[in-house]
Image (cartoon, rainbow over all chains, first blue to last red; front, top):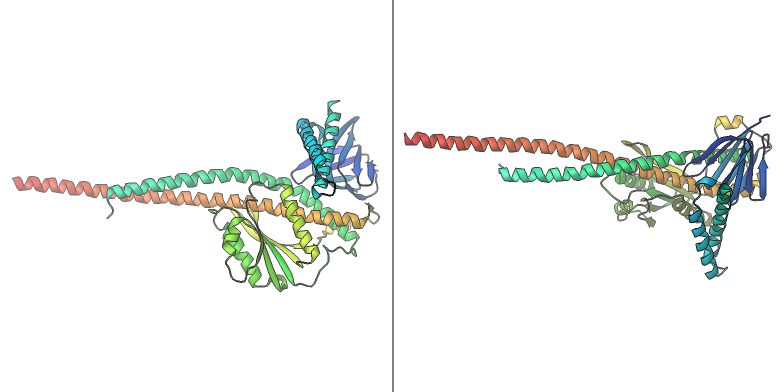
Length: 137
Length: 290
């Protein structure tokens, strides 16, 4: 049985990661899921959230925004619309986005189409801040 | 024969033109590099998407999703990608021609064809042509391509298709091969025809977990696939535009250089002729005094 997972993470703009890792914890639509070597083939959708992978003893965090995880043998492929590793996140920008989203949500009617869009923006900003904070520690 | 002054004027005007074409060439060369990088960067995602899609299609061959289903061919939507600006050789006109031919020949056997145009030049070329219906035109979209743009375009197309406004969607765009080589390409966007490679067939794995369920995964992945395809086509089209502009400006600069040479030659000849006449006059004047 394979001892290692080949993690590949791609977005429409670039290949974010291509690494060998020991464990992956991904934010699936039905809840967090951990992937270890020898996992059954799986295809699942991701929600906005924090993805963690371990390599050696160190953990790395990535903020992902919608996507898919495919596990096939020891290959794990993550297709995400955006994926930002913790050290690439611009904390100031994320906080500004959070502020904007909060402002907009206060004014909008929950029935409005815009409300859901801003809600999603809020969620994304929160995740980005959360992931960025992990890096600082 | 043109006077010396006239020729001199023409030379300097051609020189000015040459300077402009040279500058345009440099600008597109820089833009081309950026566009090319974007095309290359988007490739892995598009390929992975294709892989995932075809492996799903192989496992659930009997799955019925509206985006996979073949319908009776009545109305077709043809999305064409052109540039907002001209001076790029045959880039826009070849797309317009291909689109017209597609409609005229009733390619793929539809009854009605509707065009959706990206880029101002495509609209200018096609809006007055007989037998062409245009439903929407997008301008100033190709300046800075983001995934969000492609995603909006994709959603619109998928919505129209599901509503039954169209029974097939095609894209005509310039595929980018190199700075001097672009090819007009027509691809079918909808219904989706998944390709299954032989390699994948061998890798067939029977038990596969889908979360939440295979239908849900499929119905979220198919519209994404359309978006990715559009994103990729847009990027290729922009890279092709810059490539086409660069090579056409390069040949324009070369033509200008050739013209300057010719005019300079003409100028020198005219000057020499003028000197000769002057000498003749002086000599004959001196003769007459003797």
